[in-house]
Image (cartoon, rainbow, N blue to C red; front, side, top):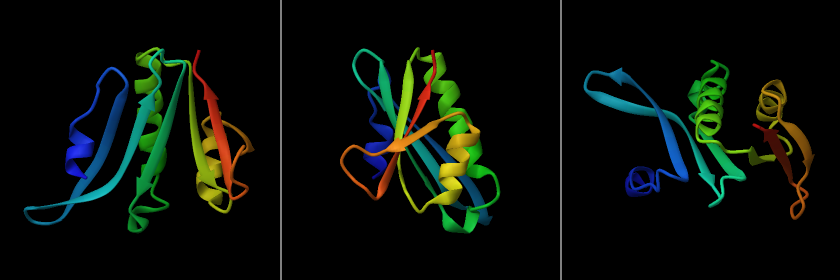
Length: 118
């Protein structure tokens, strides 16, 4: 996994990682968000993962705002993501950030979220 997170095509991909320390000298991975854009930067898909122990503390919003800013700076026109339809906190966060929600074209258990950036 470390290789996948560190060997990126920086023109089209980025992963932001949120870490902290609970024990002296030991870093904990609290969350990450990744973005992968198509070659013309028309669309980029994001994925986010957050340690369940960190849920409800605003870290998901922090990561999402950071990756949205990154996408805007890279000239990406829109971001998309797929969210489980029962993941109410993530659906609410996406709506609060301006994403639109629509049925997923291939999977009834997913909601496609979309944010126009330009």
